[in-house]
Image (cartoon, rainbow, N blue to C red; front, side):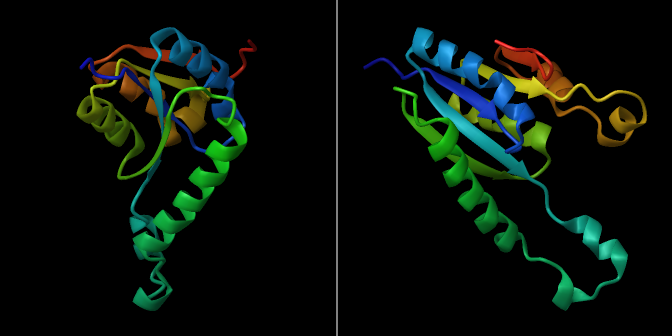
Length: 150
């Protein structure tokens, strides 16, 4: 039996990530692929530097449960028109690393994601998840500029 094609669609639940959605839909239909909508959530280690004490630090499982609820709502609202199977996954860790790892683990044919188009200081501080994914992924990456319209 032939393996089902898989497309990874990373999201941060923002409107900007939705810019890639028409491309995800088109490619999923062409490849007859299931869509893996993923959200990567980093460990809240930054809060430890605020000296808030352990009782005030949010637990990772709280972040994960919130992310799962958001993923469920996001897929129901934005991916309901898809004929293909939708898989929603929460990936704990650095977004670019986890997206690349996940795509490799499932044997994805393609990653389709929006680049937010940060520049200057914002780019230096936040970096670009899309850039790292483009450099490290073993499969093709379709990078959709945030300002594009389909």
